[in-house]
Image (cartoon, rainbow, N blue to C red):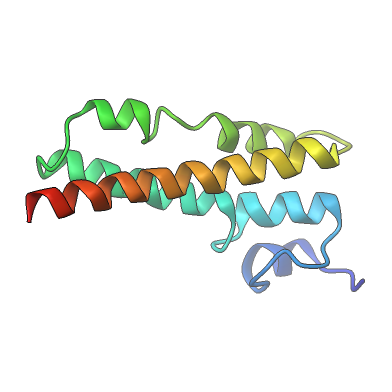
Amino acid sequence: MPKYTFEEICKTIKTDDGLKLKDRLHFHVFNENGAVNAKDLADKKIDKAVDAGICKSGAILAYGGFANYAADKLMKMTRNKRVNRSELNVLIEMTWDAAKKANDFVDAKIEETI
């Protein structure tokens, strides 16, 4: 396993394959290809859909910026000295899933309006 610098983890690496636990956590929190960024992009998509009147404001509560439990836990986990493997894997999967659900919701609402 190669050792990466924090800068490489945050900017140049495209996937988390072969990373150590702490590096994998930093990848998903700080890298543009990580799970937290995917959730942030989905939140922005929900906000735009609400502003455009495509869906109601409750979508922000259900899928948007107020539904960030897993992403927030990942952020807080960066402060820990040790990372629990199973907790990390579950939170990453939950964050990807939340982003996918938000994107699917907006896409379905857009299809309804067309």
